[in-house]
Image (cartoon, rainbow, N blue to C red; front, side, top):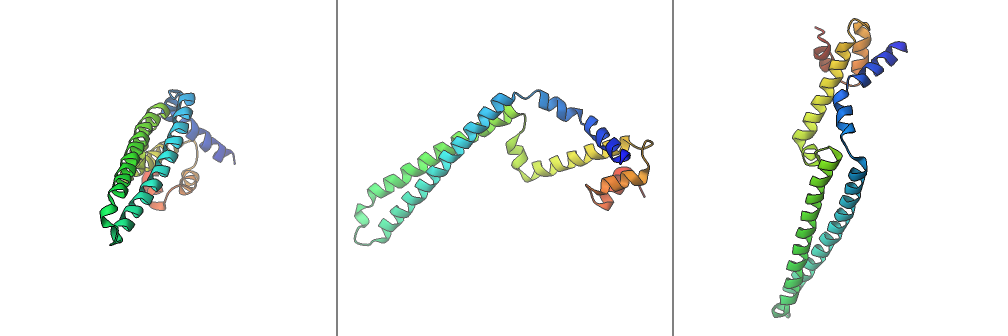
Amino acid sequence: MKLAIAISLALVFALPSFDAMRSAVDYDTCHSDLDTLRWRSDDAATKAEAASDAERQYKDCLDDSHNRSGCSLDRSHDESAKDDLESALDDVASKVRSVSSSCGFDLAAAASPDGARLRYERTKQRYCNSLNGMKGIAPLDSLYKQCRQAMSDQECRVCLGIK
């Protein structure tokens, strides 16, 4: 039990870069920007629904062979709804950039497959560094068991330098 507590404390103190990043964040601005992002996302969702409805109405008009010539108003509504949606999506993208800045977290990079993989690799590396910092303090088999709670056998062997 004491060993697990010592390892946990070592892990907490081994992450100063995360703490430094957190202290640079203005959480009031981050919160406000996230609220605005939620509002803009809701607005974009409403506009996407309107664009879908307008497109369906225009296609229905075109499918009605008796009314083909009277579809110009439906076409205009369809184009306008899609323009409104594009504008709303631009607002969302702008606010994503603002949130990334104010919250100290790059949402666009994090959402990419490469970003998620890189974050996972950095987290594993910080964890390995913490475990390796405990060598000589804790028995290697205890560090290995602790490691196995988070990573595969092969990853832990590489991390801890076990053959």
